[in-house]
Amino acid sequence: MNSGSRIDRFRTSLARSGRVLRFFAPTVRPQAGRLAVALALSALAVLAEVLRPLPLQVVIDQVLVPNRAPHPSWLAHSIDALPVRTLIIGAALATLLASALAGLFEYVRTIVLSEAAQRVVARIRRDLFRHLMILPSQWHTRRSHGDVLLRLTGDIVMLRELLVGSLLDAAASVLLIVGTLGMMLWLDAGLTLISLVAVPPVAVLGTLLTRKIRRVVRRTREKEGALAGRSGEALGAVAMLQAFGAAAQVAGAFERENRSNLRSSLKASRLEALLARSLDLMTSAGVAVTIVFGTFAVLRGDLTAGGLIVFLTYQRVLYRPLRRLAQVVSRSAKAAVCGERVAEVLRTVPTITDRVAARTCERASGRLEFENVGVRYERGDLALDDVSFEVPAGSIGAIRGESGAGKSTLLALVPRLVDPTSGRVLLDGVDLREYTLESLRRQVAVVFQDSVLLGLTVSENIALGDPDATQEAIHAAAECAGVHRFAAELPNGFDTVVGERGAELSGGQRQRIAIARATLRNAPILVLDEPFAHLDDASRDHVLAALRTLAKSRTVLIVTHREHPGLVADFEIVLAGGRVASHRSLAGVA
Image 1: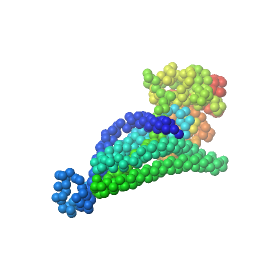
Image 2: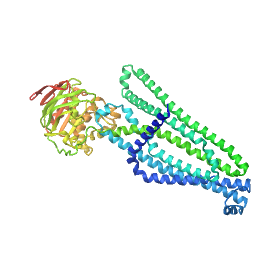
Image 3: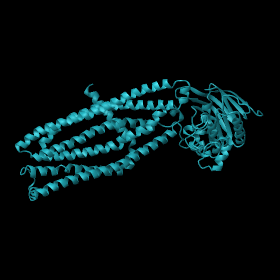
Image 4: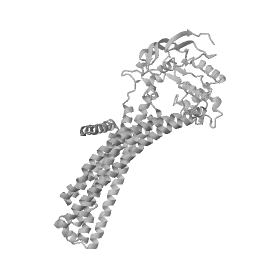
């Protein structure tokens, strides 16, 4: 690889880190006060660290090897006037005081910096979660949930290194380098230049290895995201895998991906270890060179023995922040990769948003009109094509069709989970896109084909339909959907926690809770996607009776792929291949 390409890649690396820093700067800015305090404490800790070796020189040059210390005249007279015992004890106390102050400043700095870092992490995680909540469902469908969770958790923690930890560590290291170099130059300028012989190799090696570390870390994080996605997928389908005897097959695939991830992780660890040990070797070589030239300087009388010992102490102190800077660069490289992954999500612009002049939708009558509606997926497939029909306010409409006919897509248009790529959907004569999302979605209650419950109690899951609802209203909605029949048999009744995604309940029970939640919302439009999929005959009849009552004041769309005896509907739309195959009235049909 030629030097030009190396320079270009280094510039690219810096540009990447710079982009991440600029993107998250508004998030870090509120912590500027804490960061300034941490930086000031770093400066004080550096000052104490720089002064700490000086008492040792006084002891060596005034007590162990006297009359060889070239101190200023006023300082020499003061030191000479002190008894040896006082000089030794004073030097020891001064060293202890400097160490205590350095430790105290560093301790407080760590506390302040940790608070700033945790606040930054909390804010980024909050912003990322909120952004995920407004991204369209199609975006989530195309991505692994495991990878998204990794960005929401591990990647943000890694990003903290770049935004807070690494910057302050780098600043503290630079301050320590400047202070230490100043003292070394004061002791012996020529020896200082000789001692810096290891710096260029350290810088070159750090740059080369850091680039490799960054590439390996990016691959590792991608593999970890895929691994998290596969594990989450498999754990959610354990029963199916066991029933088909496919658990071993899936475990084998998981193991192959796990081994691949292990190889990437080990490679990153080896590179980091190589960087650390190589830096140690180079700095030790620098110390060895200093010992040779420094000893000759002492023999010539150009430097005192105490001066050489203290100089070597400063040299080791100098190499410590140099190594730390290399580590900072390595950590920053890893953090920049994670930062890009987080920023990638935050930069994703939601495709369904409020228009600039969007208006509030007050209580709607529920009249819906579909005018030449077409929906095309991003991959180019046509889900709906030139669909037109009207849903009168207060009516019940049955939407039927085979799987893949476009029924669920049609349903998703009503609360604007999907927007038409052609045509329009109107509510009370107004295009849905003219309303604010929040006010529009207050007009619609939806029951999805796969009933989605959270790991809350039965009451709390129903209350998601209306967080301000009273217990009486919750129980009334539950009775309407037939939830009260099985809730009374649960260990804690309506206060029973249903488990993750309602795992403690049957499919029919989850469906009835979802219907109760939609009922509680008291929206003028009620849309149900396969509401009878998990219900037995008795439960279905109960829900049908409830829907008859609800329809008196609501517009109801029931999406189903087949007819149900006793389904009370005013009209029926049959979809085939994304188009309206038939549209007929069912008035008088029981």
